[in-house]
Amino acid sequence: MLLFYAPDITTATTHYVLPEDESRHCLKVMRLQVGDEIFLTNGQGTLFKVKIAVNDLHACMVEIVEAIDNYQPMDYYLHLAVAPTKNTDRFEWFAEKAVEIGVSKITTLCCENSERTSIKSDRIVRLMIAAMKQSLRAYLPSLEVNVGFKDFIRQSQTFAGQKLIAYCGTASQASVPLQEALKKDKSALVLIGPEGDFSPQEVELALANGFVPVSMGDMRLRTETAALMACATACIVNQKL
Amino acid sequence: MLLFYAPDITTATTHYVLPEDESRHCLKVMRLQVGDEIFLTNGQGTLFKVKIAVNDLHACMVEIVEAIDNYQPMDYYLHLAVAPTKNTDRFEWFAEKAVEIGVSKITTLCCENSERTSIKSDRIVRLMIAAMKQSLRAYLPSLEVNVGFKDFIRQSQTFAGQKLIAYCGTASQASVPLQEALKKDKSALVLIGPEGDFSPQEVELALANGFVPVSMGDMRLRTETAALMACATACIVNQKL
Image (tube, rainbow over all chains, first blue to last red):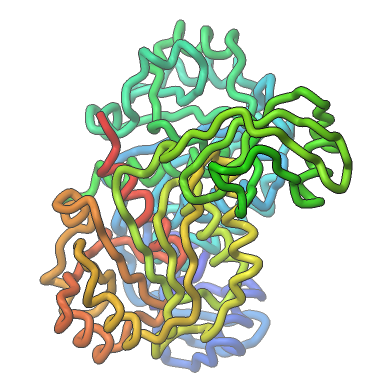
């Protein structure tokens, strides 16, 4: 099953022209021909079965055969808010793997101890799209970058699910294992701090706003690894057995 | 806590000279001085508390203060045998993360559908050592490369724990969820195939030799992501709650 991204396709579309890079990938790299079937997604949950109609290398046209709404949605909601890593490669790896394993939304947080204050979203979004296509998903997780910690806490006041904060400080004796917290609610928001951890003021603000401290065990994990473990934990806890 | 790697240190050692790169890192990068305390590990489970004695940039000498045997061992055993990825970055990323999260041994397998037949171990071992130091572990997982699939199955005949094979083929309806399998035994060996999956003959050989098919859910994961999920699953299943 070959899946391509067509962000502006709708269920009203009968024919669609692929962007140049997708046209080239389709016709030159994969050597598909008129009549061959491929799949498109708009990243909003709809999967389109389509047939190649015009094999123009720059503008491959496809005919929509069938549209499947709500294609294999995640049956849980996970929003990861992570301090960006100094090395952008590491954050990019995390974003790609999070899409493969399952995530609903990713936010990058500006924290007191962040090694990097800002991150460019374009490149990360491209990687997330590629991961969505490769893992045959029809939902593109949203990415929100460079949100200040206080602003994020304020934004999250309306979040109806569980609000969790993972940090290393002394008060974490009161923490709950992340896997236990995630079993309680199918909807969760998890904050993952920078290598230098959240500051005491940031922790205090989060706790005052209903965030529950969680721990992922005794391991000393890099930020992107902690974020990935949170992602993997949610996936494992929600697996149908 | 700063941890350095000293492979040839033993409990009989009273004074030790750090390799040049560790000396430089210690004295120039971290700017430590005579009398400062750091930690060394031999990667075999012993943690050494040491004091800087001679601040030679090329050959920093330390005096052993205390040796702690069997420092924070993993309380489960996990051996991951993985087909190497075409892109070595991806495999390196997996090896680093596996050490952070917890793994006992990594083997790379030569399978029929492997995208890459051989892998160079030196670079990967260096990354694994760096990950061990960064995550404050005293056990360096072993790495064995380029083992033929049949040879590996034969070698594993003496393995006393659970033998598990993760693959996508039609016979996997009979598979057990990986997390369930890992709950049964604290000692496990998991085979992760290449992107093109294990061949039917490879699967048959594994099943005939006591390997149990496992599944990690409906996700379509890249090889290195599947290997990492196996690692994360073992970690999560074995966490003390």
